[in-house]
Amino acid sequence: MKLLTPFKLGHIELKNRMVMAAMTRSRSFSDGMATDLMAEYYAQRASAGLILSEAINISADAVGSPFTPGLYTAAQVESWKKVTDAVHAQGGVIFAQLWHTGRVAHSVDRNGALPVAPSAIKIEGMQHFTSRGAKDFEIPREMTAADIRQTIDDYVQAAKNAIAAGFDGVELHAANGYLPQQFLSDSANLRTDEYGGSIENKARFTLDVMRALIGAVGGGKVGIKISPLHPYAGIAFDDPSATYTYLINELNKLDFAFVELMKRSPMFPLLPHYPADDEIERFGKLVKHTLIAGTAYTRDTGEAELEKGIADLIAYGSAFLANPDLPRRFELGTELNTPDRATMFGGGEHGYTDYPVL
Image 1 (cartoon, rainbow, N blue to C red):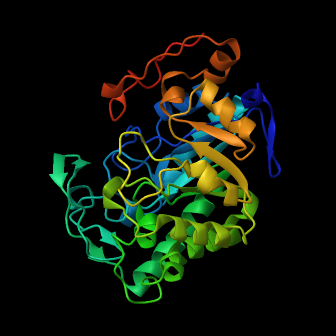
Image 2: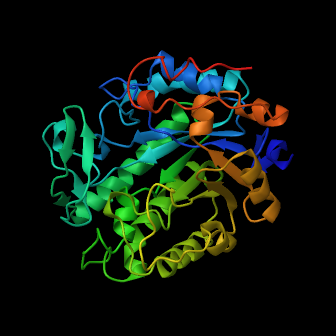
């Protein structure tokens, strides 16, 4: 079974081709600290070839949701060491996913400060989960040139902090409607400066951040997650193929570890003008780096994806959430635990560290 074969990710040896996808679980302290329970959770899943951590806020300004962890204070960095130590003790590899939520946020969890975004455009048609219940989104504050420079610096510092905390690398979260994708999109970016207008300008922020991360910690310790056709949080493109063909071609000029390509979630309908063909076929073939394919794969469909020869690794989300020993279960062909959706976000050990293993 190809899923269970080793893979060399740059200089890092992965025990198999199964990646634990980043999943927000909202079990951090309110101060963004990693907990002992989080260390146990990740260590339980260290049989994955690669663990991508839950999204981690790069700064106080990046925070969008309650009880999500950070990597911007000395105490937060120190708190993550118990997580990375626990994973490494089990022979695992773990990258930190770097997160800035942009407009996917609310002031109630930001000490009253409005969210920031490329343009002052509110997300319509959905509400945001906050510490005070579901709330309508607010009109974000448009970022200034100085804000953009500071945010890139924040990504760099968070990456350095991640390495100091023991992570094996970092992944830029440029998917799912968060800040880098807001800059990329036509629906969230109406800027007229060097970060808006043309596809080249809209891609500038993501590429600037990637270059900065590579310069800060080395390309072998950097990856990026993209989701070209996933319309979460009001993200829309006039021509997604043109945007992501340009972005991928520019990323191909940079030396870094991997691209994680997230397919559109079946829960979200395809926008009428979007291409209906498979994202791995359309966009994955363009990627010259190691390619991680993700979204709703099973044992069989993941194996089939690898056999196509486009993707190198397969990301599993809720399957790893509910099955800490997922590679073992795939090896034996045994039944999987079913994820408990009621305990996915927030709470304690129930639905987090108490899923049974073989």
